[in-house]
Length: 151
Image (tube, rainbow, N blue to C red; front, side, top):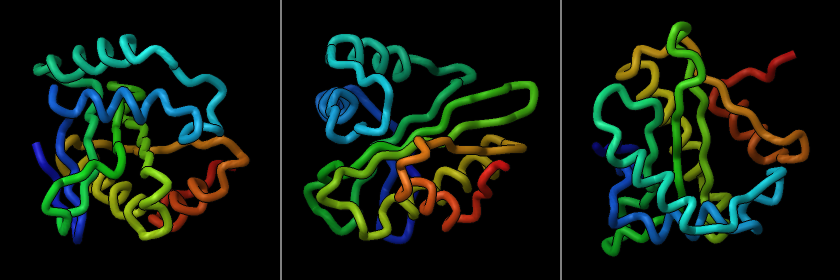
């Protein structure tokens, strides 16, 4: 599955992406606002193998983000949706763009693509995102794409 944006491609993760995913998911420098970051790449590998093999009624959608102008298709981030409440058709959004690609609008574009996918293809009634209160960039990004801060 692939989602195309203005200059981004979100490709559903595959076995070929596991090295990148294991590296990004265990990078404490990327997740410095998180309380816990898994350091065991084997744990991450197994988690994503299960996600890749999940074919019927997936509870999450995980995408590798690439720039469509990059002929090498170098991964620049990860974009994800996972079910919060199946009954309420509520999904949570998550995204991470590698620091060297930050500030170029890729995070906003990837998040917008996830929202469109959730509402148009998954029939979501609500999509939300959460971030640490100190993660100002993520909060601003979510507000920029039309999400509202809970009061």
